[in-house]
Amino acid sequence: MAERRARLDQPNLPRRGLRVSYDPEAFGRVTERIARFLGTGRYLIVQTIIVLLWIAWNIVFQHGPLHFDRYPFIFLTLILSLQAAYSAPLILLAQNRQDDRDRVNLEEDRSQARQSGADAEYLAREIAAIRIALGDVVTRDYLRSELQRFDRDDRDRDRDRDRDRDRDRDRSRERKDKNRDRDRDRDRDRDKLTDPA
Image (tube, rainbow, N blue to C red; front, side, top):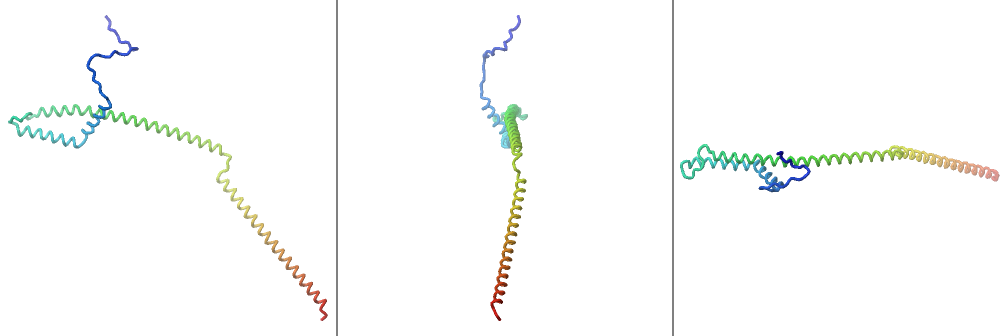
């Protein structure tokens, strides 16, 4: 008889048996703390002290009732191997979590970079549109040259006006001088005519 194949369009039935449930985030935080502790100098010093005390205890009390591990220290080797067997996966779990965080940060940085690029491109297009729209507007250099020309023309007009005023003043003075001289000559001629001597 052929085996029944599970249908892919229907969900699986819950399995019977012991199911362990745990919070992956909390477990990940604990593994990171342990991995962080395993990478410190304090851990190395504590582990070295424990191993030295273990060896010293078992050598000093080698023939007494307090002796619990013989010379090749097989129990110590077993404990260190067990500790290494657990610490390696814990460190890998912590590294995987850090890689996930780095990946999320990298995606966020890429997203921000894309957004900044899009913003910069939008602003460049807007500035280009403003420049095109302002193409017929007076530029600073053109305005400056026109103001200088106007100022120069204004100074020339003032100079011409001052020159004309001076010329008119000089003519007026000359006329007054001529009139005075003529009046003086007339007075002299009159005085000569009226004076018999």
